Length: 120
Image (cartoon, rainbow, N blue to C red; front, side):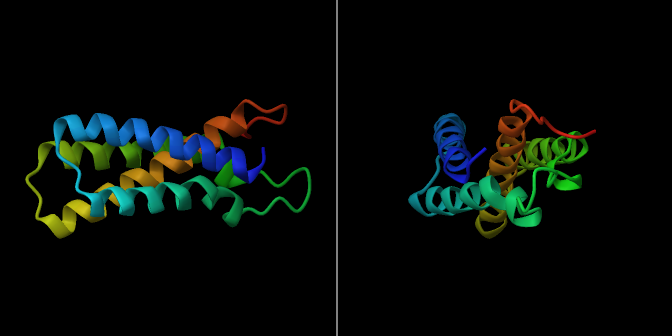
């Protein structure tokens, strides 16, 4: 799948995530920009780690195992954000991690719908 599609999917999912999270905790413009940048990085990170040099470029960073790990990281970071009363500096870092994991996971989910899919 092309990089532009991964970016569009990541940005769309980020807007939904930010909207839902803003309903629970208010998100400042600074956090919004930080999360937006983080989701862009997460959306293209698998292809940076494993460049598409040939048709078999999908290794460990494009696998179901990686998706499971990234979803766990996303879930833990969201739980930390929602449950713990964190200082502002830590809250921004955790939000950025969750946004990056969100972009990465949707990159892998989008790749799983292609003909090659994701390796085990």
